[in-house]
Length: 266
Image: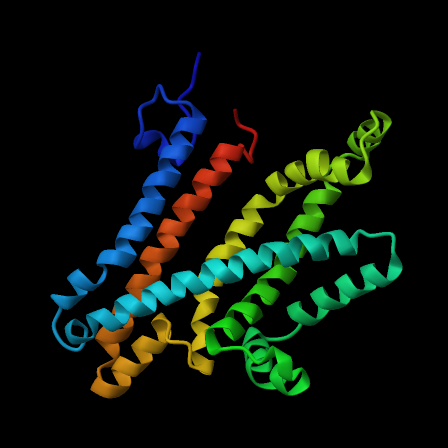
């Protein structure tokens, strides 16, 4: 007897739609909702009483900066994660040691210290790398999430049977072709759930950028409460915006997992 689809989108889209159609629709709708929320968030906030209403535009701008920071750092973290994962699996010892050292240091030190180091200490060590507050925060967040991505991707690569690599090589594929066409797509599919969790965590971790002056959502909330001495409504509003953003990102991530059939249910 046929059973109904077991994904969360079955209640939103026609049952006759395929998994790819449902996931694609969810990704498109959620992405549109995210853009619409960032564009229109100031309107409902403006109708709220003080201290939220007068600061509606500030909250909206802080929301946009938070999302932008998350996207930039997320892309950097994915690149860093792939490079570090490949490095940790390399037969070239110095490259393997460098990748292991990177992951060890980043995962073993607080993110706040890393943000401050990139913004304050790195320019003193390398004057040519003096970055703006936004770029410093993006670099620190990207490097941080990259270390966690590296472990997820490394585990995914390690889960691929060696027989597939040997078969690809026997067919004449080069090591680079084997990795890019055979190993990495499957490894990414296996590593996707923890990578998704890392992106959602990154959105929340971006709040630490306020310590170096990035005008993101937490910074705006702190400024408004400092000026009005009304922390309760300010931080409730701030937390609510974060909750909306993480919910939409989770929906997009879940749809991507469904489209790639991570749990191999279909």
